[in-house]
Image (cartoon, rainbow, N blue to C red; front, top):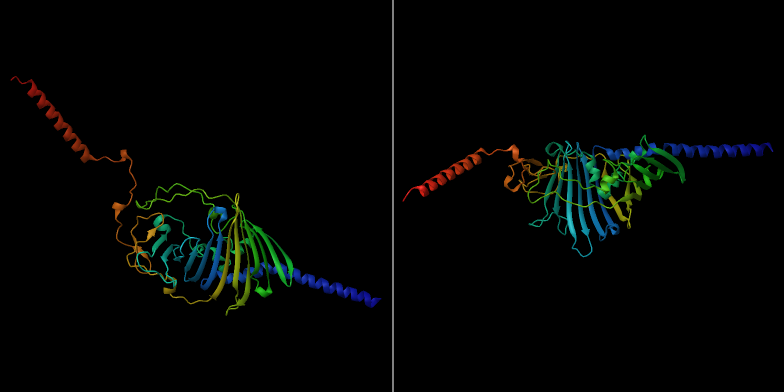
Length: 405
């Protein structure tokens, strides 16, 4: 009888100890996750990946789109380069091959370099190469500097390579203003549910994934925050009149567009697999799959399914200045368009935008001056002379008519 009681007590102690251990692991899950994500905010990082995105645009009455991408990320020395080579296919249209490189400079300026690609995914030559250079710069055009967030913004569907989801770092969903619940999910895994001004997130992770998420789901309302403003600003941008300080070339008038459809919610749901560790013992996932759904107030949602294969990652990359330049080639002297100040004489010097020869102002629309603010004295003098001459001629004509014959 005594042994049986002792056995029951021992069993209760054993179960209590195991339950306590599970709660202990769950209580540490958020901190473990943040520690696992910290290397992805490193000042030196390179990533190479490939992906396939399929977008169904029934909600916008547009044909489906399939896009294959080769993605490269290089971050170092206060600068970064995000490069995406894309092969886009739409029903009834020929394949479209394009490369976009976004170079972020230390001062926060962002340069978007674009060029067409050939069948080998190399830069295309000839006149139909769709080359272009567009610069965002606060000092030149009073535009807000995008700074390092441009890295994640320009990754678009591939932002999860750096563990951003919903235009937001995953750690921001677990900030001090978040309500977080953690519970055991079995097999030494933990489920984290958090609600914050950035939205709601549900994560499942554990020791086998290095405390990176194996599965995740993010839900945002249009009023939920993202890296800049709200997610509604990203998906429902409202048309606005042109800024009177902007000066556009005559052949490049400000674009006009109608209001986008109302968005109710946006969700990102995905999973990561094939977890490995880098040479620095940082965990990463070889494969990622994410499905984004933009749910509209009317009509079916827009669904984008992206599958990504990470080819390489280096958390301690040693990069040269050449590594942090675009690999696209542009002729020296190519005009660089400055967002919001297209009249400025900025050209390409072979590696970066510089001030060049003043633009041909005859092709640009100059701001009109109020009439009362400008007096042309030369014109007034000519008008006065003509009026006086007219009066003299009239007097001469009248005298001749009155002179007796």
